[in-house]
Length: 416
Image (cartoon, rainbow, N blue to C red):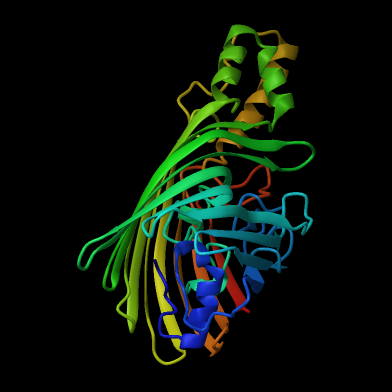
């Protein structure tokens, strides 16, 4: 498990273990009560000099910094609480609730985790309910800003898979050698997430496998996942395509995400001897629909000096549009139909620009003010590429790719 705050006091480490209890961590100074409440949060502010789009930590946000407002508190601000209940030596349960900005601009709390765990043997555990998807190194704590050095996890990798949990079951098997500790996790479930105005994201038959190894200061995690995905966005566009006969119906059939196969894989490596760290992750995703495919990676390193941790990193995502043709052929159509087809093609082109390609060069510093509070400052140069709007949202219709945005962020992270 990746803990860039490893040099914190034992009290802070115990707070972290309370938050990440699903990872099997424990502390000596646990309370005698079978109930335990813990929490976490981030107070953030972000400035972007981009005026044609919003910088956001996730495409599941309503707005961000840049076009909507020069400064935004919505990019990173969140609050979470977690309740752990240990019934006996074998049975335990956890509920985690998080509030952060949603697509409808509200901060309505969402149940992030809610599951029951059965420790069948010291090595074998089963969970049932809402469970974190074990994709990426920070899967179990990606919402907890205090747990990593940056203001946010690199969006080029983590933002490609904004879904962080599923409703179902998983099985974890720990098998250890003399120096190497390994955990294999298999999972199966589904998800149904409201977006806005009745739109929903649904994933059925979510299945995958994750494997983690740890040896001394080194750790690694590899994961694969597959699902049948449905996203009922742009219904008017697909209805318009269907009205253009066989060619329109063919484009609609290929691009509309209605029970389409989606796959993703990731590999993360981390080396953290204490005084410094270096971490890298790479991922790949493919959706048989307008979301297309991506390849992404980042590399980040930092040095700990007392309560200060300066760090730097580079991240990149390469997007690939779905196989075409992804536009109507308008030759020979009557003028009214050609005009309508031109509008449809413009909407299709805008949809294709959402397949992200961008790079980010970043540098920042973390200051641990107390055992459970950290202040972070981070500056990034974000460049969109390949005719896309990258990971930005709310772009203007004539957004010009290749622009570099200067993004400055401040965050106060805390756990309790």
